[in-house]
Image 1 (spheres, helix red, strand yellow):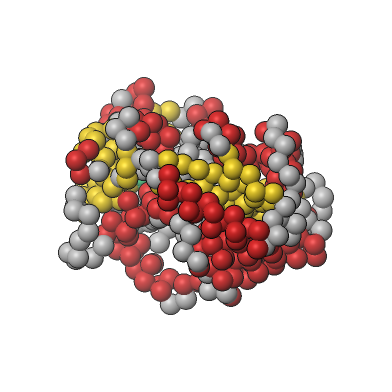
Image 2: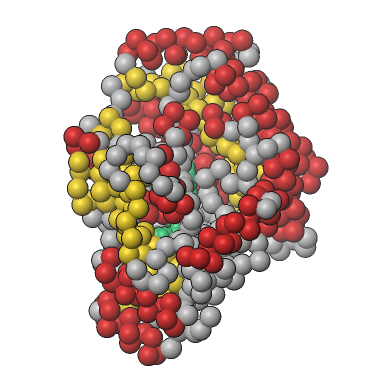
Length: 465
Ligand SMILES: Cc1cc2nc3c(=O)[nH]c(=O)nc-3n(C[C@H](O)[C@H](O)[C@H](O)COP(=O)(O)OP(=O)(O)OC[C@H]3O[C@@H](n4cnc5c(N)ncnc54)[C@H](O)[C@@H]3O)c2cc1C
Protein backbone atom coordinates (compact mmCIF):
# COMPACT_ATOMS: atom_id res chain seq x y z
CA UNK A 1 0.00 0.00 0.00
CA UNK A 2 1.33 3.47 -0.87
CA UNK A 3 1.32 6.69 1.14
CA UNK A 4 -0.63 9.77 0.09
CA UNK A 5 1.55 12.35 -1.70
CA UNK A 6 1.00 16.02 -2.51
CA UNK A 7 0.18 14.98 -6.07
CA UNK A 8 -2.56 12.68 -4.71
CA UNK A 9 -4.05 15.54 -2.68
CA UNK A 10 -4.00 17.70 -5.81
CA UNK A 11 -5.87 14.99 -7.72
CA UNK A 12 -8.49 14.71 -4.94
CA UNK A 13 -8.96 18.50 -5.07
CA UNK A 14 -9.44 18.22 -8.82
CA UNK A 15 -12.18 15.62 -8.28
CA UNK A 16 -14.03 17.05 -5.26
CA UNK A 17 -13.06 20.72 -5.10
CA UNK A 18 -10.61 22.44 -2.74
CA UNK A 19 -13.26 23.18 -0.10
CA UNK A 20 -14.04 19.45 0.17
CA UNK A 21 -10.52 18.18 0.79
CA UNK A 22 -8.52 18.67 3.97
CA UNK A 23 -5.18 17.70 5.47
CA UNK A 24 -5.64 19.97 8.51
CA UNK A 25 -4.68 18.27 11.77
CA UNK A 26 -7.95 19.28 13.46
CA UNK A 27 -9.99 17.60 10.71
CA UNK A 28 -7.80 14.50 10.68
CA UNK A 29 -8.02 14.22 14.48
CA UNK A 30 -11.80 14.58 14.46
CA UNK A 31 -12.00 11.54 12.17
CA UNK A 32 -9.34 9.40 13.84
CA UNK A 33 -11.41 7.50 16.43
CA UNK A 34 -14.95 6.20 16.74
CA UNK A 35 -16.68 5.43 20.08
CA UNK A 36 -14.50 2.38 20.74
CA UNK A 37 -11.58 1.93 23.13
CA UNK A 38 -8.93 1.70 20.40
CA UNK A 39 -6.17 4.26 20.06
CA UNK A 40 -6.88 6.96 17.47
CA UNK A 41 -5.19 6.88 14.09
CA UNK A 42 -5.52 9.69 11.55
CA UNK A 43 -6.04 9.40 7.81
CA UNK A 44 -3.62 11.34 5.57
CA UNK A 45 -6.38 13.28 3.86
CA UNK A 46 -10.14 13.72 4.20
CA UNK A 47 -12.53 14.14 1.31
CA UNK A 48 -16.20 15.09 1.64
CA UNK A 49 -17.72 13.75 -1.59
CA UNK A 50 -21.11 14.96 -2.80
CA UNK A 51 -22.03 12.43 -5.48
CA UNK A 52 -21.64 8.82 -6.58
CA UNK A 53 -19.54 10.07 -9.50
CA UNK A 54 -17.07 11.75 -7.14
CA UNK A 55 -16.86 8.66 -4.93
CA UNK A 56 -16.26 6.52 -8.03
CA UNK A 57 -13.51 8.85 -9.31
CA UNK A 58 -11.79 8.93 -5.89
CA UNK A 59 -11.93 5.17 -5.32
CA UNK A 60 -10.85 4.41 -8.90
CA UNK A 61 -7.86 6.74 -8.51
CA UNK A 62 -6.97 5.27 -5.10
CA UNK A 63 -7.04 1.79 -6.59
CA UNK A 64 -4.60 2.73 -9.34
CA UNK A 65 -2.34 4.32 -6.75
CA UNK A 66 -2.91 1.55 -4.16
CA UNK A 67 -4.01 4.02 -1.48
CA UNK A 68 -6.24 2.96 1.44
CA UNK A 69 -9.83 4.28 1.35
CA UNK A 70 -11.95 4.26 4.51
CA UNK A 71 -15.59 5.34 4.60
CA UNK A 72 -16.67 7.32 7.67
CA UNK A 73 -20.22 8.34 8.39
CA UNK A 74 -21.50 9.04 11.93
CA UNK A 75 -18.29 7.70 13.51
CA UNK A 76 -20.40 6.07 16.25
CA UNK A 77 -19.10 2.51 15.85
CA UNK A 78 -17.95 0.66 18.96
CA UNK A 79 -15.38 -1.70 17.44
CA UNK A 80 -13.04 0.65 15.58
CA UNK A 81 -14.89 -0.06 12.30
CA UNK A 82 -14.23 3.31 10.55
CA UNK A 83 -10.81 4.06 12.10
CA UNK A 84 -8.24 4.64 9.31
CA UNK A 85 -5.62 2.41 10.95
CA UNK A 86 -3.16 2.65 8.06
CA UNK A 87 -3.90 6.23 7.07
CA UNK A 88 -4.82 6.93 3.45
CA UNK A 89 -7.98 8.65 2.20
CA UNK A 90 -10.94 9.06 4.54
CA UNK A 91 -14.24 9.42 2.68
CA UNK A 92 -16.50 11.43 4.97
CA UNK A 93 -19.92 10.40 3.67
CA UNK A 94 -22.13 12.42 6.01
CA UNK A 95 -22.73 15.33 3.62
CA UNK A 96 -24.43 12.93 1.18
CA UNK A 97 -27.62 12.95 3.25
CA UNK A 98 -30.52 13.64 0.90
CA UNK A 99 -33.82 11.80 0.89
CA UNK A 100 -34.07 11.17 -2.84
CA UNK A 101 -37.55 9.63 -3.09
CA UNK A 102 -40.25 8.57 -0.67
CA UNK A 103 -42.20 5.92 -2.58
CA UNK A 104 -45.19 6.07 -0.28
CA UNK A 105 -47.34 3.61 -2.19
CA UNK A 106 -44.59 0.98 -2.16
CA UNK A 107 -43.60 1.68 1.48
CA UNK A 108 -40.05 2.45 0.35
CA UNK A 109 -37.56 5.27 0.58
CA UNK A 110 -34.43 6.02 -1.45
CA UNK A 111 -31.71 7.88 0.46
CA UNK A 112 -28.11 8.91 0.29
CA UNK A 113 -26.09 7.05 2.94
CA UNK A 114 -25.17 10.02 5.15
CA UNK A 115 -28.67 10.69 6.48
CA UNK A 116 -29.02 10.19 10.24
CA UNK A 117 -31.49 7.53 11.41
CA UNK A 118 -33.58 9.93 13.55
CA UNK A 119 -33.70 12.55 10.77
CA UNK A 120 -34.96 9.96 8.30
CA UNK A 121 -37.66 8.78 10.70
CA UNK A 122 -38.74 12.35 11.45
CA UNK A 123 -39.34 12.89 7.73
CA UNK A 124 -41.01 9.50 7.28
CA UNK A 125 -43.21 10.00 10.37
CA UNK A 126 -45.00 12.86 8.59
CA UNK A 127 -46.23 10.25 6.12
CA UNK A 128 -47.12 7.68 8.79
CA UNK A 129 -44.08 5.54 7.96
CA UNK A 130 -40.89 4.45 9.74
CA UNK A 131 -37.68 2.46 9.41
CA UNK A 132 -37.78 0.35 12.59
CA UNK A 133 -34.38 -1.01 13.80
CA UNK A 134 -33.80 1.81 16.38
CA UNK A 135 -30.13 1.69 17.43
CA UNK A 136 -29.29 3.28 20.78
CA UNK A 137 -27.23 5.77 18.74
CA UNK A 138 -30.25 6.80 16.61
CA UNK A 139 -29.36 10.50 16.84
CA UNK A 140 -25.93 10.04 15.22
CA UNK A 141 -25.91 6.72 13.34
CA UNK A 142 -26.39 7.15 9.60
CA UNK A 143 -28.14 4.81 7.21
CA UNK A 144 -24.81 4.13 5.42
CA UNK A 145 -23.17 3.17 8.72
CA UNK A 146 -26.16 1.04 9.68
CA UNK A 147 -26.07 -0.77 6.33
CA UNK A 148 -22.30 -1.29 6.56
CA UNK A 149 -22.52 -2.64 10.14
CA UNK A 150 -25.90 -4.40 9.70
CA UNK A 151 -26.97 -2.48 12.77
CA UNK A 152 -30.12 -3.13 14.69
CA UNK A 153 -31.31 -2.16 18.13
CA UNK A 154 -34.24 -2.18 20.45
CA UNK A 155 -36.96 -2.98 17.95
CA UNK A 156 -35.17 -5.85 16.22
CA UNK A 157 -37.07 -8.36 18.36
CA UNK A 158 -40.27 -7.52 16.48
CA UNK A 159 -39.12 -5.93 13.25
CA UNK A 160 -35.71 -7.44 12.48
CA UNK A 161 -32.37 -5.84 11.64
CA UNK A 162 -31.16 -3.42 8.94
CA UNK A 163 -30.48 -6.29 6.52
CA UNK A 164 -34.19 -7.16 6.45
CA UNK A 165 -35.03 -3.69 5.12
CA UNK A 166 -32.42 -3.11 2.43
CA UNK A 167 -33.93 -3.71 -1.00
CA UNK A 168 -31.43 -2.04 -3.28
CA UNK A 169 -27.96 -0.49 -3.06
CA UNK A 170 -25.81 1.61 -5.35
CA UNK A 171 -22.22 0.60 -4.65
CA UNK A 172 -18.86 1.92 -5.84
CA UNK A 173 -16.51 -1.04 -6.17
CA UNK A 174 -12.78 -0.95 -5.46
CA UNK A 175 -11.90 -0.34 -9.13
CA UNK A 176 -14.20 2.69 -9.23
CA UNK A 177 -16.99 1.00 -11.17
CA UNK A 178 -20.57 1.54 -9.99
CA UNK A 179 -23.12 -1.24 -9.65
CA UNK A 180 -26.71 -1.41 -8.46
CA UNK A 181 -27.73 -4.54 -6.58
CA UNK A 182 -31.24 -5.67 -5.62
CA UNK A 183 -34.63 -4.47 -6.86
CA UNK A 184 -37.77 -2.70 -5.66
CA UNK A 185 -39.57 -6.03 -5.25
CA UNK A 186 -40.30 -7.06 -1.67
CA UNK A 187 -38.76 -10.47 -2.32
CA UNK A 188 -36.59 -12.01 -4.99
CA UNK A 189 -35.15 -15.42 -5.86
CA UNK A 190 -33.09 -14.07 -8.71
CA UNK A 191 -29.42 -14.98 -8.41
CA UNK A 192 -26.97 -14.51 -5.58
CA UNK A 193 -28.06 -12.11 -2.86
CA UNK A 194 -25.49 -9.35 -3.38
CA UNK A 195 -27.50 -6.90 -1.29
CA UNK A 196 -26.91 -9.14 1.73
CA UNK A 197 -23.23 -9.45 0.82
CA UNK A 198 -22.67 -5.70 1.02
CA UNK A 199 -24.83 -5.28 4.13
CA UNK A 200 -22.53 -5.86 7.11
CA UNK A 201 -19.33 -5.68 5.03
CA UNK A 202 -18.12 -2.61 6.97
CA UNK A 203 -16.86 -0.73 3.93
CA UNK A 204 -14.43 -3.52 3.02
CA UNK A 205 -16.13 -4.56 -0.23
CA UNK A 206 -17.47 -1.32 -1.67
CA UNK A 207 -18.71 2.18 -0.83
CA UNK A 208 -22.49 2.53 -0.64
CA UNK A 209 -23.76 5.73 -2.24
CA UNK A 210 -27.52 5.09 -2.40
CA UNK A 211 -29.86 2.91 -0.34
CA UNK A 212 -33.46 1.83 -0.98
CA UNK A 213 -35.17 0.75 2.23
CA UNK A 214 -38.43 -1.06 2.84
CA UNK A 215 -40.57 0.74 5.44
CA UNK A 216 -43.33 -0.03 7.91
CA UNK A 217 -46.48 1.88 8.80
CA UNK A 218 -46.35 3.60 12.18
CA UNK A 219 -48.18 1.60 14.84
CA UNK A 220 -51.62 2.74 15.97
CA UNK A 221 -50.58 2.76 19.63
CA UNK A 222 -47.53 2.21 21.81
CA UNK A 223 -47.34 1.04 25.42
CA UNK A 224 -44.32 0.59 27.66
CA UNK A 225 -43.68 -1.19 30.92
CA UNK A 226 -40.81 -1.20 33.37
CA UNK A 227 -40.59 -4.30 35.57
CA UNK A 228 -37.98 -4.88 38.26
CA UNK A 229 -36.91 -8.12 39.90
CA UNK A 230 -34.97 -9.29 42.91
CA UNK A 231 -32.68 -11.54 40.89
CA UNK A 232 -31.37 -11.40 37.32
CA UNK A 233 -32.56 -14.99 36.78
CA UNK A 234 -36.14 -13.83 37.32
CA UNK A 235 -35.79 -11.10 34.69
CA UNK A 236 -34.16 -13.43 32.14
CA UNK A 237 -36.79 -16.08 32.99
CA UNK A 238 -39.53 -13.64 31.97
CA UNK A 239 -37.72 -12.91 28.70
CA UNK A 240 -37.52 -16.61 27.86
CA UNK A 241 -41.14 -17.36 28.79
CA UNK A 242 -42.35 -14.26 26.95
CA UNK A 243 -40.60 -14.99 23.66
CA UNK A 244 -41.18 -18.74 23.70
CA UNK A 245 -44.80 -18.17 24.76
CA UNK A 246 -45.55 -16.01 21.71
CA UNK A 247 -45.53 -12.53 23.29
CA UNK A 248 -44.84 -10.01 20.54
CA UNK A 249 -43.06 -7.03 22.12
CA UNK A 250 -41.61 -4.29 19.92
CA UNK A 251 -38.73 -4.11 22.43
CA UNK A 252 -37.65 -6.10 25.45
CA UNK A 253 -34.52 -4.68 27.01
CA UNK A 254 -32.64 -5.81 30.09
CA UNK A 255 -30.43 -3.74 32.43
CA UNK A 256 -28.63 -5.01 35.50
CA UNK A 257 -28.77 -3.10 38.76
CA UNK A 258 -25.41 -1.38 38.30
CA UNK A 259 -26.49 -0.06 34.88
CA UNK A 260 -29.75 1.21 36.39
CA UNK A 261 -27.78 2.91 39.17
CA UNK A 262 -25.58 4.89 36.76
CA UNK A 263 -28.50 5.84 34.50
CA UNK A 264 -30.39 7.08 37.56
CA UNK A 265 -27.41 9.24 38.51
CA UNK A 266 -26.65 10.58 35.05
CA UNK A 267 -30.21 10.99 33.74
CA UNK A 268 -31.82 12.19 36.99
CA UNK A 269 -34.18 9.21 37.19
CA UNK A 270 -35.46 7.30 40.19
CA UNK A 271 -35.77 3.76 38.85
CA UNK A 272 -35.51 0.89 41.35
CA UNK A 273 -31.89 -0.26 41.38
CA UNK A 274 -32.71 -3.89 40.63
CA UNK A 275 -32.45 -6.11 37.54
CA UNK A 276 -34.95 -4.47 35.22
CA UNK A 277 -36.86 -5.11 32.02
CA UNK A 278 -38.12 -2.35 29.72
CA UNK A 279 -40.84 -3.75 27.47
CA UNK A 280 -42.66 -1.97 24.67
CA UNK A 281 -45.65 -3.00 22.56
CA UNK A 282 -46.91 -1.70 19.24
CA UNK A 283 -50.43 -2.40 17.99
CA UNK A 284 -54.07 -1.54 18.46
CA UNK A 285 -55.62 -1.01 21.87
CA UNK A 286 -57.14 -4.47 22.24
CA UNK A 287 -53.97 -6.30 21.15
CA UNK A 288 -51.82 -4.19 23.48
CA UNK A 289 -54.16 -4.79 26.45
CA UNK A 290 -53.97 -8.53 25.86
CA UNK A 291 -50.15 -8.45 25.59
CA UNK A 292 -49.81 -6.32 28.71
CA UNK A 293 -51.95 -8.76 30.69
CA UNK A 294 -49.88 -11.73 29.50
CA UNK A 295 -46.65 -9.92 30.42
CA UNK A 296 -48.02 -8.97 33.84
CA UNK A 297 -48.83 -12.62 34.58
CA UNK A 298 -45.35 -13.74 33.50
CA UNK A 299 -43.69 -11.08 35.64
CA UNK A 300 -45.81 -12.05 38.66
CA UNK A 301 -44.94 -15.72 38.11
CA UNK A 302 -41.28 -14.68 38.37
CA UNK A 303 -41.89 -12.65 41.53
CA UNK A 304 -41.47 -9.17 40.08
CA UNK A 305 -41.02 -6.40 42.63
CA UNK A 306 -42.69 -3.72 40.53
CA UNK A 307 -44.61 -3.58 37.25
CA UNK A 308 -45.17 0.00 36.12
CA UNK A 309 -46.79 1.08 32.93
CA UNK A 310 -45.63 4.33 31.34
CA UNK A 311 -49.01 5.81 30.62
CA UNK A 312 -48.12 8.71 28.35
CA UNK A 313 -45.57 9.63 25.71
CA UNK A 314 -43.53 11.75 28.12
CA UNK A 315 -43.20 8.91 30.64
CA UNK A 316 -42.36 6.49 27.85
CA UNK A 317 -39.71 8.75 26.38
CA UNK A 318 -38.12 9.17 29.81
CA UNK A 319 -37.88 5.40 30.11
CA UNK A 320 -36.26 5.06 26.72
CA UNK A 321 -33.79 7.81 27.50
CA UNK A 322 -32.63 5.66 30.41
CA UNK A 323 -32.02 2.72 28.11
CA UNK A 324 -30.69 4.70 25.14
CA UNK A 325 -28.27 6.62 27.31
CA UNK A 326 -26.99 3.54 29.18
CA UNK A 327 -23.68 3.53 27.26
CA UNK A 328 -23.08 7.25 27.74
CA UNK A 329 -24.21 7.16 31.39
CA UNK A 330 -21.63 4.46 32.09
CA UNK A 331 -18.95 6.39 30.21
CA UNK A 332 -19.65 9.63 32.10
CA UNK A 333 -19.59 7.76 35.42
CA UNK A 334 -16.01 6.60 34.86
CA UNK A 335 -14.04 9.60 33.59
CA UNK A 336 -10.49 8.75 32.60
CA UNK A 337 -11.23 5.02 32.49
CA UNK A 338 -11.45 2.76 29.44
CA UNK A 339 -14.69 0.95 28.56
CA UNK A 340 -14.17 -2.32 26.72
CA UNK A 341 -17.44 -3.07 24.95
CA UNK A 342 -18.93 -6.47 24.22
CA UNK A 343 -21.84 -7.35 21.93
CA UNK A 344 -22.34 -11.11 22.01
CA UNK A 345 -25.58 -12.68 20.83
CA UNK A 346 -26.60 -16.17 21.94
CA UNK A 347 -29.46 -18.58 21.27
CA UNK A 348 -32.55 -17.67 23.27
CA UNK A 349 -32.30 -20.63 25.67
CA UNK A 350 -28.76 -19.57 26.69
CA UNK A 351 -29.41 -15.90 27.40
CA UNK A 352 -30.02 -16.24 31.16
CA UNK A 353 -26.95 -18.41 31.63
CA UNK A 354 -24.88 -15.96 29.52
CA UNK A 355 -25.83 -13.06 31.81
CA UNK A 356 -24.92 -15.21 34.84
CA UNK A 357 -21.59 -16.08 33.21
CA UNK A 358 -20.71 -12.39 32.74
CA UNK A 359 -21.49 -11.65 36.39
CA UNK A 360 -19.24 -14.57 37.40
CA UNK A 361 -16.40 -13.18 35.26
CA UNK A 362 -16.90 -9.80 36.91
CA UNK A 363 -16.76 -11.34 40.40
CA UNK A 364 -13.71 -13.46 39.62
CA UNK A 365 -11.69 -10.64 38.04
CA UNK A 366 -12.89 -7.92 40.41
CA UNK A 367 -13.71 -5.73 37.39
CA UNK A 368 -16.90 -3.73 37.08
CA UNK A 369 -18.69 -5.18 34.05
CA UNK A 370 -22.03 -3.57 33.21
CA UNK A 371 -24.65 -5.77 31.57
CA UNK A 372 -27.57 -4.60 29.44
CA UNK A 373 -28.97 -5.36 26.03
CA UNK A 374 -31.60 -6.46 23.60
CA UNK A 375 -32.76 -9.45 25.64
CA UNK A 376 -35.50 -10.56 23.25
CA UNK A 377 -32.83 -11.23 20.60
CA UNK A 378 -30.32 -12.82 23.01
CA UNK A 379 -28.04 -9.81 22.36
CA UNK A 380 -26.02 -8.86 25.42
CA UNK A 381 -23.92 -5.71 25.74
CA UNK A 382 -21.12 -5.67 28.28
CA UNK A 383 -18.93 -2.75 29.33
CA UNK A 384 -15.81 -3.73 31.27
CA UNK A 385 -14.31 -0.72 33.07
CA UNK A 386 -10.53 -0.61 33.32
CA UNK A 387 -7.97 1.88 34.50
CA UNK A 388 -4.99 1.88 32.14
CA UNK A 389 -2.88 3.50 34.86
CA UNK A 390 -3.23 0.37 36.98
CA UNK A 391 -0.71 -2.18 35.80
CA UNK A 392 -2.31 -5.20 34.17
CA UNK A 393 -5.92 -3.94 34.41
CA UNK A 394 -6.33 -3.23 30.70
CA UNK A 395 -5.07 -6.71 29.85
CA UNK A 396 -7.41 -8.16 32.48
CA UNK A 397 -10.36 -6.33 30.89
CA UNK A 398 -9.45 -7.59 27.42
CA UNK A 399 -9.08 -11.15 28.76
CA UNK A 400 -12.46 -10.91 30.53
CA UNK A 401 -14.15 -9.68 27.35
CA UNK A 402 -12.47 -12.46 25.35
CA UNK A 403 -13.70 -15.03 27.86
CA UNK A 404 -17.25 -13.73 27.49
CA UNK A 405 -17.07 -13.90 23.69
CA UNK A 406 -15.55 -17.39 23.74
CA UNK A 407 -18.32 -18.57 26.03
CA UNK A 408 -20.93 -17.13 23.66
CA UNK A 409 -19.28 -18.96 20.76
CA UNK A 410 -19.21 -22.23 22.74
CA UNK A 411 -22.98 -22.09 23.20
CA UNK A 412 -23.57 -21.45 19.49
CA UNK A 413 -23.66 -17.67 19.55
CA UNK A 414 -21.77 -14.95 17.71
CA UNK A 415 -19.03 -12.46 18.64
CA UNK A 416 -21.15 -9.58 17.37
CA UNK A 417 -24.91 -9.20 17.41
CA UNK A 418 -24.92 -5.74 15.85
CA UNK A 419 -21.73 -3.68 16.29
CA UNK A 420 -19.73 -5.55 13.65
CA UNK A 421 -16.19 -6.93 13.70
CA UNK A 422 -14.09 -3.81 13.05
CA UNK A 423 -10.82 -4.18 14.92
CA UNK A 424 -12.27 -5.45 18.17
CA UNK A 425 -13.66 -8.82 17.19
CA UNK A 426 -11.21 -9.87 14.45
CA UNK A 427 -9.51 -12.44 16.65
CA UNK A 428 -12.73 -14.47 16.97
CA UNK A 429 -13.43 -14.76 13.25
CA UNK A 430 -11.63 -18.07 12.74
CA UNK A 431 -13.18 -19.69 15.82
CA UNK A 432 -16.63 -18.48 14.82
CA UNK A 433 -16.50 -19.15 11.10
CA UNK A 434 -13.93 -21.94 10.70
CA UNK A 435 -13.36 -22.90 7.06
CA UNK A 436 -15.91 -20.38 5.80
CA UNK A 437 -13.52 -17.57 6.74
CA UNK A 438 -11.47 -18.68 3.72
CA UNK A 439 -14.55 -18.11 1.53
CA UNK A 440 -14.87 -14.59 2.97
CA UNK A 441 -11.22 -13.99 2.08
CA UNK A 442 -11.86 -15.12 -1.52
CA UNK A 443 -14.77 -12.68 -1.78
CA UNK A 444 -12.62 -9.85 -0.39
CA UNK A 445 -9.74 -10.73 -2.73
CA UNK A 446 -12.07 -10.86 -5.73
CA UNK A 447 -13.82 -7.56 -5.09
CA UNK A 448 -10.81 -5.68 -3.73
CA UNK A 449 -7.63 -7.34 -5.06
CA UNK A 450 -5.39 -4.48 -3.89
CA UNK A 451 -6.92 -4.48 -0.40
CA UNK A 452 -7.54 -0.72 -0.48
CA UNK A 453 -11.01 -0.72 1.15
CA UNK A 454 -10.96 -0.27 4.93
CA UNK A 455 -7.74 -2.25 5.44
CA UNK A 456 -7.11 -3.85 8.80
CA UNK A 457 -10.73 -4.75 9.49
CA UNK A 458 -12.71 -7.99 9.83
CA UNK A 459 -9.89 -10.46 9.02
CA UNK A 460 -7.73 -11.59 11.96
CA UNK A 461 -4.40 -10.98 10.28
CA UNK A 462 -5.73 -8.32 7.97
CA UNK A 463 -3.91 -5.44 6.54
CA UNK A 464 -5.79 -5.73 3.31
CA UNK A 465 -7.08 -8.94 1.76
C1 LIG B 1 -24.25 5.10 22.59
C2 LIG B 1 -24.20 4.13 21.45
C3 LIG B 1 -25.25 3.24 21.29
C4 LIG B 1 -25.23 2.32 20.24
N1 LIG B 1 -26.28 1.48 20.09
C5 LIG B 1 -26.31 0.64 19.05
C6 LIG B 1 -27.43 -0.24 18.87
O1 LIG B 1 -28.40 -0.24 19.64
N2 LIG B 1 -27.41 -1.06 17.80
C7 LIG B 1 -26.37 -1.07 16.91
O2 LIG B 1 -26.41 -1.84 15.95
N3 LIG B 1 -25.29 -0.27 17.07
C8 LIG B 1 -25.25 0.59 18.09
N4 LIG B 1 -24.16 1.41 18.26
C9 LIG B 1 -23.04 1.34 17.29
C10 LIG B 1 -23.14 2.29 16.07
O3 LIG B 1 -23.83 3.47 16.44
C11 LIG B 1 -23.81 1.62 14.86
O4 LIG B 1 -23.05 0.55 14.41
C12 LIG B 1 -24.08 2.62 13.71
O5 LIG B 1 -24.92 2.04 12.76
C13 LIG B 1 -22.82 3.11 13.02
O6 LIG B 1 -23.21 4.11 12.11
P1 LIG B 1 -22.29 5.35 11.76
O7 LIG B 1 -23.05 6.19 10.80
O8 LIG B 1 -21.82 6.01 12.99
O9 LIG B 1 -21.13 4.61 10.99
P2 LIG B 1 -19.53 4.73 11.16
O10 LIG B 1 -19.17 4.39 12.58
O11 LIG B 1 -19.05 6.01 10.62
O12 LIG B 1 -19.08 3.57 10.21
C14 LIG B 1 -19.46 2.24 10.43
C15 LIG B 1 -18.85 1.33 9.37
O13 LIG B 1 -19.48 1.58 8.13
C16 LIG B 1 -18.53 1.93 7.14
N5 LIG B 1 -19.23 2.89 6.29
C17 LIG B 1 -19.74 4.08 6.64
N6 LIG B 1 -20.37 4.63 5.60
C18 LIG B 1 -20.25 3.77 4.57
C19 LIG B 1 -20.68 3.79 3.22
N7 LIG B 1 -21.38 4.79 2.72
N8 LIG B 1 -20.35 2.73 2.43
C20 LIG B 1 -19.65 1.69 2.93
N9 LIG B 1 -19.22 1.63 4.19
C21 LIG B 1 -19.52 2.66 5.00
C22 LIG B 1 -17.33 2.46 7.90
O14 LIG B 1 -16.14 2.31 7.18
C23 LIG B 1 -17.37 1.55 9.13
O15 LIG B 1 -16.76 0.32 8.85
C24 LIG B 1 -24.14 2.31 19.32
C25 LIG B 1 -23.09 3.22 19.48
C26 LIG B 1 -23.11 4.12 20.53
C27 LIG B 1 -21.97 5.09 20.67
